[in-house]
Structures are given as structure tokens and as C-alpha cells.
Length: 229
Ligand code: CA
Figure 1 (tube, rainbow, N blue to C red):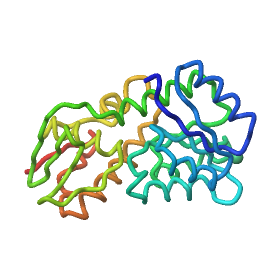
Figure 2 (figure 1 turned 135 degrees about the horizontal axis):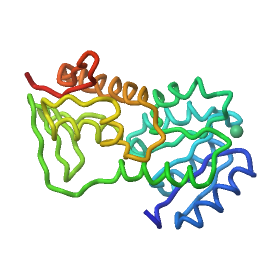
Figure 3 (figure 1 turned 90 degrees about the vertical axis):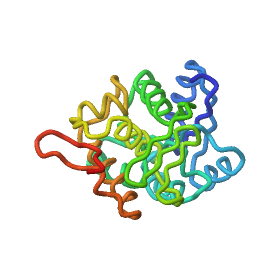
Figure 4 (figure 1 turned 45 degrees about the vertical axis):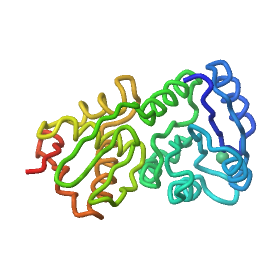
């Protein structure tokens, strides 16, 4: 984990300083941007391993910037953690929908932030095994991190990829939201169960573009199941 490059996009210097100190101590390399324009310059220079993105930025909002990064082929795979103020908490699901992988509510402790960063990085990390999973024409290649249907690549975010990989590795099994959180987000994640629903929706949407949304099934009162039947 140490040595990973993190980019923080935050207009409040005090928060940037606090984060810089905490992440430096944890062994991360941090680059700082105070607005969208600066961030895009740094992104173009070198892609970070993870982005910390403030919800409220001058000029362009964090949410709009998250959308922009996730729309762009170049930056799509970089996980994003949104930094939100408590008053904006209701909007956090909106943040997840814009493509963020997690969110941290201000004020946060350095310890919490580092734990979240590590959890998101773990999820995004390629496992490097040459595993090939297949179901109903849907192919997941763990070595290259690619998912395709009939040779056409699926455009999945890092969390949706992990979710799909977990499902495909355990086809026909029903998982509760809690079990999916443990398996995909990690045991000490701070994520709420409804976050699972947001990512399931996102996964189904992408599968739906290739006529495969039926593979991820809701099991009433129990959770979710991946099934080709
Ligand atoms: Ca701000």
C-alpha cells in the first residue's frame, strides 16, 4: 500500500495540510490540487492510484469532476473517495452514482481516512491470477481485469468489477448485503448496506447494455444471486 500515489482535490488548505500529514505518515505519496483545473493538469501528468475529491469546489463541483473522470477512458479506473460535509450527507448516494467508490464525511479522523483509502485500494487492486470465469457468454478475465460479452468490452468501475468477480466465482449462491460488504468492501469498511444496492444497480445497468442484466438477481428478503439459469 505504501508508495501509492494519491491525489487530493480540495480547496480548503487546512484540510489538504491535515491529509498531507496523515498520508505522509502512512507512507503514501500525495499530490495536491485546489480546483478542477489544477486537478486535470496533475491527472494528465500522471494518473494517481486514488483520488480524494472534495464535494464542494469553486467553479466545478466535485460531483461533476467525478463524472468527468469516470467518463474518460484515461481516468475511468482510478478509484475516487468523495469528501463531503455533514450537511451534504443526503447527497452521498448521488456521489456514488456519479462514479465515486466511497465517501468520507467531514470532519474525519486521519485514521478513518487512511483505513478507507486502504480498503478502496485493496478492492481496486488486480489479483494477478490467470482466472477466467464464464457464464452465459459473459467472460471475466482476472489476469487482464477485462469483462466482455461476445468480444465486446464492458465498461465497469473497480467496485462493480470486484462485485461481479465475487458473484461469478460463487454462481447460484445467495448473498446478503452484509456478506457482499464483507467480501467486496472488506470487513472493516465503513460502508452502509444500501451502498451495495447502488453498486448492484450500476453493475446491472452495464450488464443490461449487453442484454445480461438478468444474471444478477434479487432474492426477496435474502439479498442477491448470480445465476445463468
Ligand atoms: Ca470545499
